[in-house]
Image 1 (cartoon, rainbow, N blue to C red):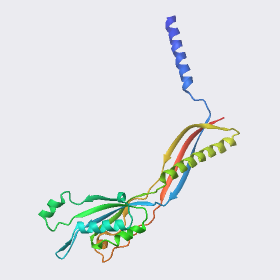
Image 2: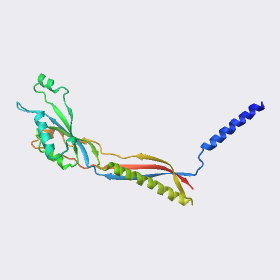
Image 3: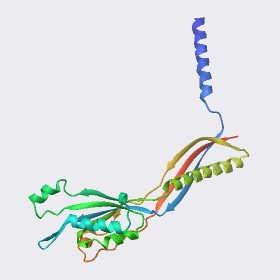
Length: 229
């Protein structure tokens, strides 16, 4: 019986010692720092959709419209890697065309604009009746990573300054950081159409775009735990 009691005491002592080792008895303060900035996107990804159309019995083909677009893109100085074909309306265009001579194909193209003045320049050189739709796919900012890193640091320093101010009010000093958690609360403008499809596609002249500069809101929150000395 004495051996069993002694064993129980030893086990209890071991558990107590282990528990004491894992408990952090340091005095701590947890604060939040926030840094925000709005930037104007300087890269906008746009989709232009072209569609064949009939004028009486004469058909303007997708090949003709595509040639106009390719020429306009080249003249605007758009890099080849910034101009891509996104989709064709029929997975088997040739077969569909043979089955139905009146079949009107449409084709979507993606263009990455770094200068939005070139958008209207390109549209003005394409047959307006062949423009089915245009829409913004996404916005971006060329210096995004550098700005993000700067804001993260500012948020962290804001958290440290807040903690130092509060601790000083208690007559204590702020120690080093124990834990840091980063939260990215940035928001980008939503993709949207940039012109009416039906009216604009059948206009006598290429429609002017209503693309404007929607701001990108960058917001970083740092939750930091500091030791109180």
